Image (cartoon, helix red, strand yellow):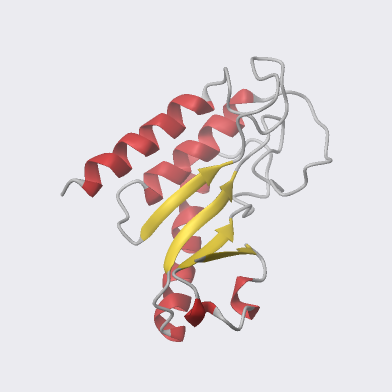
Length: 156
């Protein structure tokens, strides 16, 4: 059994001890600047990871962590407020790619993360699409790298 809470209020859920998996949509702000380097986004994910595991350890939640949604729009500022799906800006495939690379750098070899659902696949995709889809975009390569890293660590 899994329940998915939003990334900004998961700690308020009172019944984590009754589920098998702690689900969370993970639209965390990775930067406050539209063109942040990968290192800044990676650092943000590391702080998020530390705080999530600190919370799990403090609450003694035995549930396994699953990200039920991780996604970034491929538009300028896509890692600033990735939850803001109605926002519109110019296409920026690179910010989406960097955000996903930062994600796999931090979570790729983490065996406490039991699963991830990437938002999303449907949509036109391609080089002019500003939506969350990774179809036909450089971010797809980063998601594949993440999935390979998880496969490699699961066989250890």
